[in-house]
Image 1 (cartoon, rainbow, N blue to C red):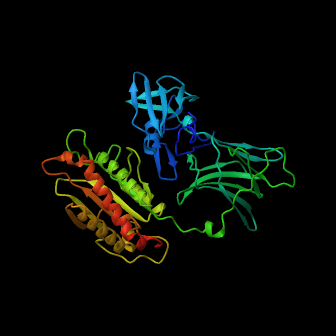
Image 2: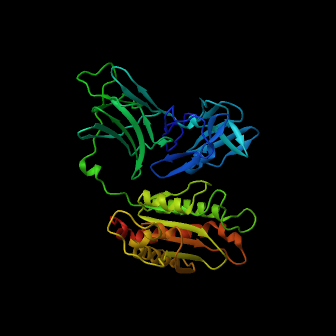
Image 3: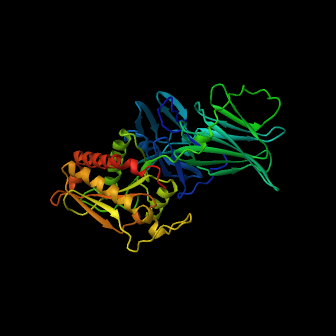
Length: 442
């Protein structure tokens, strides 16, 4: 399925290397980066072909829940309709028929399509007299480019990096090696919300962009350019852009997920679903106030406590907010981290894992107070606590946890949308109040 941002409104362009996917194992994951968020979804093996769940791919991007009628399944995304039929290898996207590259499968009520269907960009390495790397996109892209040269006695490496800040990418591969020639490797990474493609080689490379913007060719600089579309000079980030400060964003962590359901409140109401729903409400409230947001999980997946902290620290979040739903009580509980054996932050680059919070604990308490104050203004009962909770103490940024409590005689009160809206708005307002104190801090 060649998803297209112009045809379907899908806020992601995918990146695929033909050699990267063969015999995908169930534990493999595909990571999706967009300008709003990033998330991962499992890759499952069916008959030697990697498959992904359509719902896992589309729902975090705002698609409607699937509607099933017999063997036909429908999704709606940005007013465009996606139709899939079990055991068919074609689908209808926005009224146009597309080839999926394999049959649609339905497994435990989940619609599955070949992973190739969601990955429309190919990287084609051509060796020969003039080696080149051709990137073919399903839609026009216009990345910035930066050239970097590293020389020493033994090596001479030139790196060309393409910065995708407006055209998000998806990658299932970190690095692809091509040998030790003019073009040696292609790697993908994510930095400050931007996707980066870095091509390394033994000579400076020129970037040639086709007229339609769907093909980018990287090849060694030469006096004469062969019969290829005229190059469009890419905009090179200024020194200030290359050294741009880290983007301030809030990392929202919906607790539990996957096999870890968290607390149960009767019937099918479980904590992992409540926290994910509240996380999406909070993201909306923050983004409406101009604050960038990322989620540790966008779907029903397992994440260990250590992994949640690793994600937050690796991406250098400005503030971390964990969401929980707990035992019956009144209103909302707000937790700030508490170190039982406080330590001064070391002078070096590395922090002790169990006390990584030590350098940010006073700012965490400031965030907790601001959020608690805004919750009270909404008429909610608030209990503020300091607790040595995980993963709060493993987070190197200001970190808090917010826990919804159900009414003692009505567990279903956790589903009250008005209550969700009030809590999400209060957390967002609290963060807005102290944002200036958090930005620019290490």
